[in-house]
Length: 115
Image (cartoon, rainbow, N blue to C red):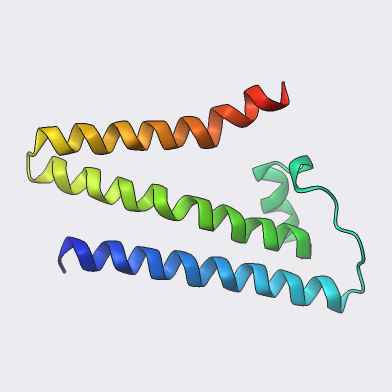
């Protein structure tokens, strides 16, 4: 399987999985008659995972959003690995720098923003 197909498949799986999780969470949310979900900023990843295990519909929707955010990270990681495999140092370094910037934005910026 060539790289373009792998990357396209990653995007399709990520988007379909994310949409399914969010849609499933919405169905459960309204089936349970809930009216006002808590603010998503109050959730942490371990709390979301525990909530999904407990059948919490809001956690299921948030997991869908996490999957959507992780999808481009996986795509850039696939590119970086491919360039490393091909020994293309320039594009491997560029891909790894992009990956580093993405991770800083995803992991560190919320820490600084919330104090």
